[in-house]
Image (cartoon, rainbow over all chains, first blue to last red; front, side, top):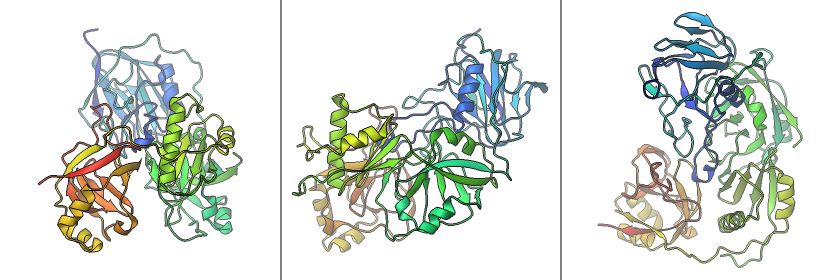
Length: 292
Length: 212
C-alpha cells in the first residue's frame, strides 16, 4: 500500500455521519454521549470487518451512501437491510466484501429500518474529539456529516475479516405492528396524573417525522401533568422519556442534551434503543412498563 | 451555606443503571457533587460513568448496582462545601450588553452599578448544560434574579455574559438564547483542542473583572 488509504464520498445520502461508541464521561460538561444509534449493528459491522468494536463506521439514514476507497479494502454493511453494490454489482449485505482500489461501494436505500452501518477495515480514521470520532448533532462535536466529494482517512486494517455464517438482524419494527419499548417508570412519574400513566402504557403512539439522533419523538395522545410548576434542570440519561409541555413523550437517543427541565416519566433500558434507532416515522410505538 | 443540619439524601431510581439524588437546593447539590468527586478520587465510590450535577440534584449514571449505592447514600453525611483552595477563574468583561439597561431597571440601580455588583460577586459553577462548556453560575442574591427575555434572540454572540433566574452564564459559542445580556468576554470557554476543553466545569469558582 502506498501511504494511508482514504475514501471519497461519491453520494453522501440524506444524512450520513461518522460514528463510534461515543464520548461517555463528559455529561457534566454538557457534552452528549453520542455514538452509533444502533450500537449492536455498529459493533457487528466492525467485528465482521476485522475491526475492534470502537472503530468508527458510517451511519446512514434512509437512503444509504456511496464511497470510493483509493486502495482495496474490506467493507461490511449492517443495520437496516439494503442492497449493497460494488461498482454496480450486487454483493452481500451483512458479510465482508472486497472493494477493489477505486471501485464504488454503495449501500442503497434501506428496505426496512432507517440506519445502515458501513464498516471499512481499519475504520474511519478522522482525528478523535474528546476520545471519540462520533458526530454529535446536538452540539456539533466531531467530523461534519458527509457531503459529496468529501475525503475521509482510513486506518490500517487490523487483520483478516471476521468469519461469520449468519448475521442476526432483529426484525425491524413494522409500521403496523410497531415498536415495543420497555420502560422503567421514574424518576418523575409522580408528575403525571393516573390517567396519563394509563395512557402512556396504552395504544396510539407513533414515531413522529421530527425524530432524529437527539430523540425519538412521538405523536398521539398527550400525557397530562398532575402538578403545575417547573422542574429545575436535572441530569438526563440515555433512554430517558421526557415529556415536554405538549405532552408528547420524547425518547432521548445518543445526541440528547445532558440536562433538561421537563419531567422524565420513565427510562428505556439501553439494550432496547437499537429498535428505536430503526423505527421509521409513522411506526406505532408501545411503551411497556417493566420493573427496574 | 445554610445553617440547617444535614437533611437525608433522597434517591430516585432512574432506569436500571442510574440514580438521581435529590437535595434541598443548589448549595446542597454543589456540596454533594464535591463529596461524590472526593469519594471517587479516594476510590470510595463504585465505578460510575457520569456524575451530573444540576439545580438540586446529582445524577449518577452507569452504575452496576444502583440499589446498593442508594442504600449506602442513606447513611452519608455530606459536609458543607470546603473552603476554596485554588484561586477563581477570572473572566474579563466589557459591560456593554444589549440588556444592560433592562437589568439595571430590574435591579433598580445604574448600569455602572450593575457592572460593579456583577464583578464584585464571587460565582461558582453549579452545573453545565445547554451547550458544551456552558456553566450555570450561582452567587447572585435572590433579589438580583431576573427573568429570561420574553422573546429569545435567534443569535447570541460567543462570549456573551447573560443573566437568567438565579444564574449567570457565558455563551461558549454563538447560539440562540433567551438570557439577559449584560456584557461580553474574550475568554475562550470551550476549545476541544485544549486540555481541559472546558474553562468552567462544575465546582469552578469564577470572578468577572470589568474591562473598559
